[in-house]
Length: 233
Image (cartoon, rainbow, N blue to C red; front, side, top):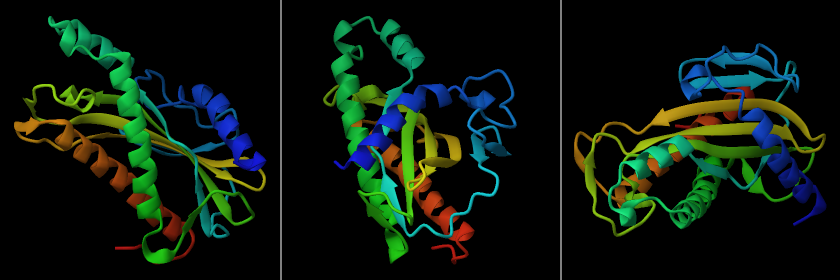
């Protein structure tokens, strides 16, 4: 790892907790989000599911390469506690080792999926080093809830659910040359209804993959739009 990448990774860790508190009501905040953040970003879009901030005057036409930092993964503590309280059999409770295994799997899947989707069409290259034409992506998956936690402990009995669960992506876009944040986006998704289908580690992982691919695909299309390129099909 180069010094530049190490510095960005450290920045990601130290700044994450401060900015995760800036979220819309749908993500557990009762107050309206600020029009301007402490780091100078201005509110660009707000819906029930999505919140976006952009630095005034920021441009994205110069970026031909993308540097993807490791994804931070955090399951909803309220969900974990509620689920465990409802389990009379201790063997069915979610353990710390279950969460760690699931976090590692999601981190690997996130990197694989985003790298694949962002490089589709050959417009962008995912790289490991910063530079004048490199946009740094600093991602996190937070507020993760799984309606059938077989994902966390494969081999447990599957259940029938209407949705695999939900999670929120938190993504920051940084200029790698100046270490300046350009945009911040949070978007919550609930997996579409399964209409009572049998849920398992396979269906849960597929649901997570669908959400991650949709985010990666939208990010690539948005970058194309602000760069004056035709949106990929």
